[in-house]
Length: 328
Length: 293
Image (cartoon, rainbow over all chains, first blue to last red; front, side, top):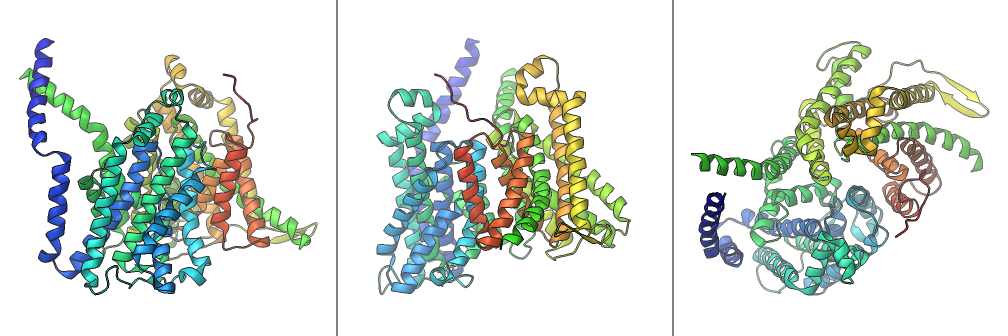
């Protein structure tokens, strides 16, 4: 028995030494640095796609936040992305106002509607909330098309006002998305250390203890929905600016599911490299498979299942393997 | 306006019976395995396409009955496969297995697209076309078929659940899985029963709903979303609740689209779900009870 424990501890210390060198902050730093240099190495279309990757990563982060801090699954986050995208799109095309004003508005609207949605659903958990968010996702395209005097209906809106007048629009679309992703990821990592973040996590893992400490469950639910909705709206705002067009096709029910798929594929990670992985998955798979559209749902479905089964079997396989290596 | 009320309620009840068929499948699966089967609509849609492909000469040109039989066998096989893959997850986390069913839904949708394409096809039922007028109400052969098939299916389901050994095992597992297992029941085999029955209910519902619209990749999936609403309003853990919820959703949707606006039907459904869950957290048939601390 003692033999086994020493074996594990030496194993762990080696791992610790290895991971100690590459701490999450350093990994994120390297990723960000290489992303800053990317446009100098890649062509225009790839730069554009990467910008969309960053935007979708924020959406994946919004879904993962809800899972990690709230313990709830949402398949309706296109509601919030649509909210953000249309606040950027409408302010831009109707009033010529740039991101300086429309991003704060998007954030405000996202948080507000997250809270508005959370209030009637405050007592719903697990599958009940999931089905309610499903209804939310279905209502989105219908609302967009019916407010066509504002949203432009099926045709959509074209976002063209630059953030910094004079700078090249192509690189702005890229760097704004990257900056947004970095800022959101940084804010989320700070939240983890804050009192609020701790209280939310406590309310999720030990509701009774949280009650005893004065964190009410309803408050926790409403605030995490507000945060997640706000991040979702930022995703939409970035998507509108980097993707240059806003149309109902980007906010369908399937898009909401794809965000969830991205979140599962990144194992609900909140760090920058992880969400980037999820965002890249959401963005690149349809691009790479665009020639054979029917394979996209199959591929998404298979990778969703694959990741879930991997998450289920991996710890077991690892355990068996370590046991086997001990025997030999 | 008021003269339209009865025909609207009647046709709402007919569609409501179909929503109930879909909702019953969802509730059966949820009651025993605590999983919400998001693949229900897409799998049912795939089987409806299978009936079309097998009877129209696209894959084979069988008679309608033989095609339905084969499609039902396919539905059983698919349900068996899905449950076999996710069964290790079911006993660990209901939310993870629910997400996994989304994956199966995506695969079923993709397979439908790959095999049958994105075309819209017509798939009718082999029933006599007639219409009789009862008290100013126009009743068509389709209406009667739906009513009879739905009533017979639901009646048979309730008889199986109430009186057979399998049904008793199903109820035992839904009420208390641990105690049921201690008593020697095999959880998995009862779960298989629920998943397969649900798939068959889905096939019946899909075949009956398709004649009112056309058959496309999304028709049946969209139809099943109303079934989700029906299940939620009925309480998600109550079979009679699913029936009542289905009919309620059918009638409410019909009245809403006629009197208010056909363009906001999904928004209305969302509002209905939120209101219903706040007033009746455990479904419309459950008594609202307080708990003592």
